Structure formats: C-alpha cells, structure tokens
Length: 51
Image 1 (cartoon, rainbow, N blue to C red):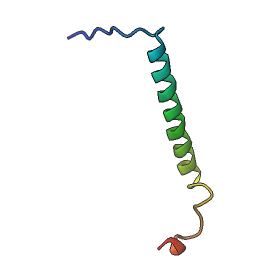
Image 2 (cartoon, rainbow, N blue to C red):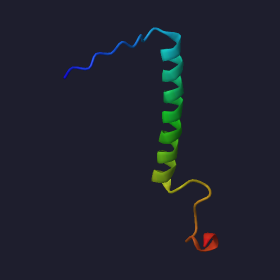
Image 3 (cartoon, rainbow, N blue to C red):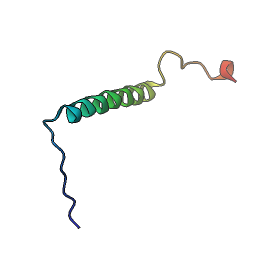
Image 4 (spheres, helix red, strand yellow):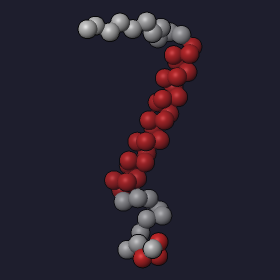
C-alpha cells in the first residue's frame, strides 16, 4: 500500500501548523532537559517536604 500525500508545503496553513508543532516540540525538549538535569529549581532535597 502506498500512501500519497497532497500536502502543499508552501501553503500558509501548513507553515502555521508546522511552526506551532515546532514550538510545542521545544516545550517538550525543554521539559526533558530539565528532567535530565534533575528537575529544575523546584526539585531538591529528599522529597520529605513534598510528602
């Protein structure tokens, strides 16, 4: 089965959607970076104060 796309990459709706998806991806990447770094400024201690 071959999927055929009819997307027009030069169209304004495509460009707008692509930009929005890339912005959302940046949010996810930033969150992943914080998680890798240990959780950011709110993280710390042994968690007892959050219990």
